[in-house]
Image (cartoon, rainbow, N blue to C red; front, side, top):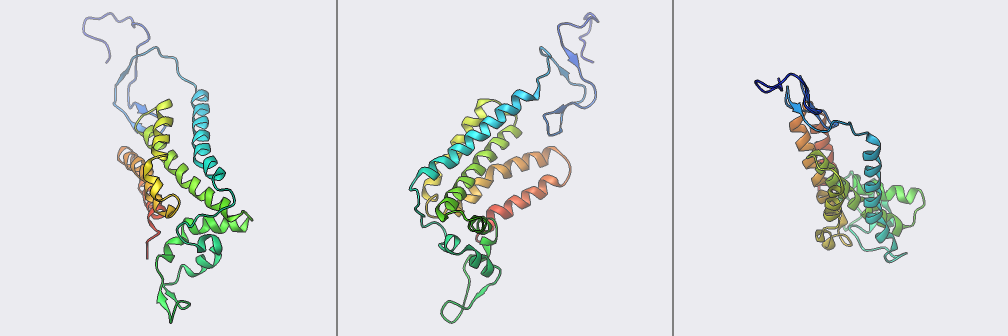
Length: 231
């Protein structure tokens, strides 16, 4: 029990004892049986937390996308593969095949299979809905940065972080100087960097909770961020 030997049976303040399994956080992580919780006691409603989460997500999305859209309007950077914005449908159609007869007398393709997911469909969808190539390219870069920022925020929440520290840390990771060498030439190389916090968060959750879901998601994230050089 929670009572000290010799102490009065009358409850002091608002301390309360929780018997059984104490579940911590919204993800069902297992706690300590028979733990006592001390504190002022009023339960916090989820409205304020939900609003703060939305604001932080909007800030990350704005910082990731708006500066890119405002930079060099109308111009396409020579990023990754030219066919991604010249003819993404043709690139995707050839990606499943190792042999490419159009080059010289035929050759084995280099890296094409890796563009089946996710970068190839992204550019194909932009062309299908009629977006200008430069906007599709900027949205792709912004999506990679946003995935990195949201991933770091989710990982830190898994570790128990709360408040403004989540936003500051997510922005610091999302705007890391590491991206400067790749963002305008080989943005697809940034995918493992963007997926790293998601992989770490899934690892932590897989160790805390039983089941196969987190392990399966780990495999899907690895496929998404690591398949570009699959050939």
